[in-house]
Amino acid sequence: MDSALAMRSLKPALGLVMTCGLLCVMLSAMSALSTRSGVRANRSSAADITADPRVRQALAKLAGDAPSVTEEQIRITEIPAPTFRESLRGMHLAKLLSDAGLKVHTDQAGNVIGERVGSAKGEFVLITAHLDTVFPVGTDVRVRREGSKLWAPGISDNGAGLATLPAIGRIMRDTKLETRSSILFVADVGEEGEGNLRGIRKLVENYRKQLRYVIALDGASIDYVTTAALASRRVEITVTGPGGHSWSDFGVPNPIDALVRGIALFLKTPAPDSPRTTFNIGSIEGGTSVNSIPAKATIKVDLRSEAEPEILKLETALRRAIQSGVEEEMQAGHEHGMGGGVGLSIDTKVLGVRPGGELAENSPLLAAVQKADDYLGNRARIERSSTDANIPLSLGIPSIALGAGGSSGRAHSLQEWYDPTGREIGMQRVLLTLLQVAGLNPPTD
Image 1 (cartoon, one colour):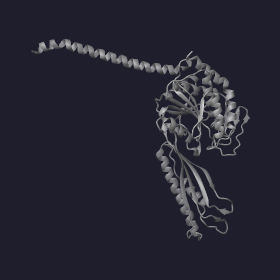
Image 2 (cartoon, rainbow, N blue to C red):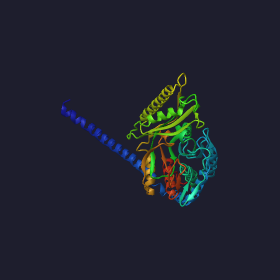
Image 3 (tube, rainbow, N blue to C red):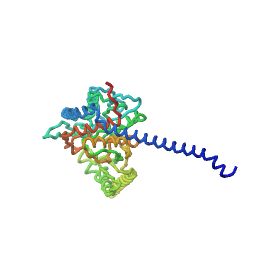
């Protein structure tokens, strides 16, 4: 067959191929457009969630209920809840969550869990607020009022978050807001200090495969959203020695003196500004009387950084500094003629480790908060902090921490205060975020 005949024979086939190819391309483009339109539609429906009259009713009820939520916050705050001793406050929250129509139980760690069942099986959104405070047993937690402000240890951290938790559940029940994902309303234990996030650790352990999102309510402020977990490490160092009488045994190595020498050295350790890194010697204990050389002294140190390798550097510097302090104190004892087997020993214990992690910038959870802020006219910055969100973020579970509304100051001090003015914006923000990520179902009637 010559080339001209071959080309004439191939033309119908080529035309069919070209027609098919063009059709396939068009169908592919239409499919992609349809998919993108679907994504936009989904996003639009999330952004327009307030078109649902039930949602508008819920937002209005939250604003109207704000004073009663504040009164409940006072009652919660006045129930002492030091870390590891949260049970009394937990019992109170269990009743509040039950009264909000939730199925309530307490897990092995002491977390109080109220479940609101969704239409999809095995799919959970967790909203949690920590029960514990940093204040020891015996702290006066009675709330006093001065103008619009409420003053008491723990009134904001985390009275504000705990009072909001059952309020959201109650409003959802009253306005018949049903969701695709089941929602776990949790008052969790062990968020502060040496609690080492034990409550959220247990929750993630129990629900990890089913958890879609985690929202932690912590404090009051609505001008931020915590999307990055600040890593930290808490270390306890104990120095022990023979002890003795302040007069007759003068020169015997003193554990307090050794720690003081070591601390003075450690305080010279540079902490970088970038990545931001900090340390705090938060507790010093030791001795039994002013005229006794102590047999034991202990310090507790908090180490934090935006980059976890910096924490390990700080811990190494701390251990070396204390070792040098002990050696200096031992040398001083030898110079006073107190050698001969009299010595000091060091014991180091890690009290807790909080891992780091970050929420993806394109996460639907972050988008949900931003849409809630847009609707409410709220402006918020993205922030890094140490919260219950640390654990799920470190495991790749999309998580944030939000303030529950109002304003506050002097957290973790006896002069802590809270002002409920505008708290309804915080509660509305939480509800709108929760409904978007849990998936609001249409009304059934």
